[in-house]
Amino acid sequence: MHIYKTWPDTLEGIPTALTIAIKAHLAEAFDHDLQAVQQFWQQYPSTLIVIHSDSGIKNLNEETQTLINLALEYSEYQEALTDLHMINLAIVDDEGSGVYLVYPNNFDFSAIKEKSNGR
Image (cartoon, one colour):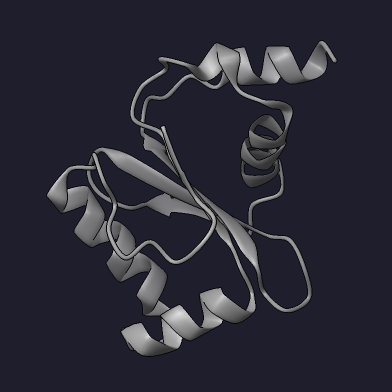
């Protein structure tokens, strides 16, 4: 899993095709103007969480669990990002900052939800 709290110039450890799809999706609302996207992320920081597998999911800190649950339960939208990945967005303030969650189509979030419910 990778977590970005600033505009990700590079997405280390993420396959190229997925990186291209993520960046295109994030830039879509700005007519693919990369400079406008970067300025927005500087003014209104958002969070991008990219999940690859379930390794480490049971050891997430409380903040990350909260962000993932927010993106799952209060998403503005959920859509296919690629044939194998989904993306959710939860808006967290009036300015438009948000939590983007990218994950495999078949990802099982039960471990995160169970841990959150057990608090």
